[in-house]
Image (cartoon, rainbow, N blue to C red; front, top):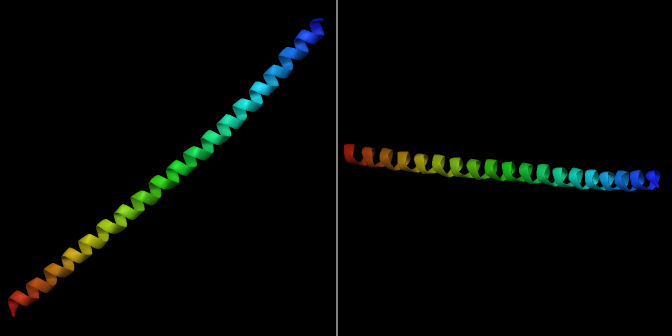
Length: 69
């Protein structure tokens, strides 16, 4: 009887450990995906900002040259 109780507890703990490991694997995968998305969005916003700065600078140069002549 003691062996059966031990066996029942042992199998329940193994099942809980398997569930916990799967949960942690899924969580790590989600965190990596979230970080990658954040990096991509940041890169996209930075690129757009640099393009806008370049466009404004080009317009200012063209306007300056037009006013000087």
